[in-house]
Image 1 (cartoon, helix red, strand yellow):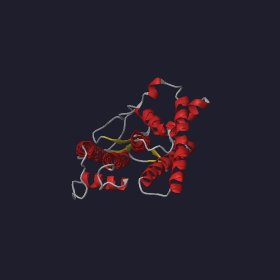
Image 2 (cartoon, helix red, strand yellow):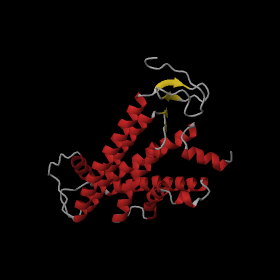
Image 3 (cartoon, rainbow, N blue to C red):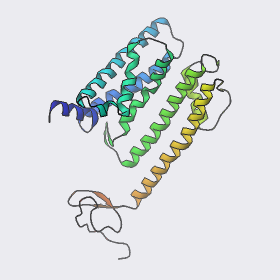
Image 4 (cartoon, rainbow, N blue to C red):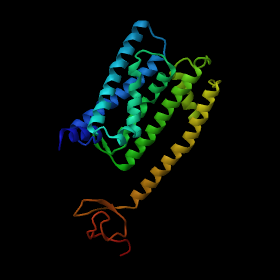
Length: 262
């Protein structure tokens, strides 16, 4: 295996110690910089603002180096450059060009950094080992809810806070997103701009469509697993076969299991 292929494996397949370390560090930095974005929406002293901007600059630089390393490991493939995750990685690095800037489109890009965590729920290999398919689906549902709240809350805040006194910080946007998605709707925060109302409609529709669909998929997966039998194939090691199976569906070897009523 060449050095490029080895690095690509570490970055793309966290099934080794170096791969898990990279995954853990990147995940921690993503969560940290998203928390930093929330913190920056609160009133802070000029000194604190400079410190937060410097921390953001250095973390974004790490993201840029990671993006370039992934690009090199993929052989500068156009297919990879145009992939959704590569585009998200690149957009996360754009604020590095204007450090400390308060331009609205850069603040919007910072909101979408949370999507970089999607890479962590694509595989059953996690920091601590391999998880089951059911647990992975649960994590994906939680990740979907978390991203939906964070992104829509951040976007509504950016649309509302210049003219709506109810949205003073990003925390207000997150609060509004949660009470709207849960259909509680206390009414203490109401979007007044057309952008804010449009985003609110999109958020509610996304929550109504995406989350139930994922829950249905999880329920079907659990039911399907409950009907399987814990018979392990002697040749390939596949575990879990249909009650009436006589051959392994992976390698075709004969399996032996007792049938109900026989």
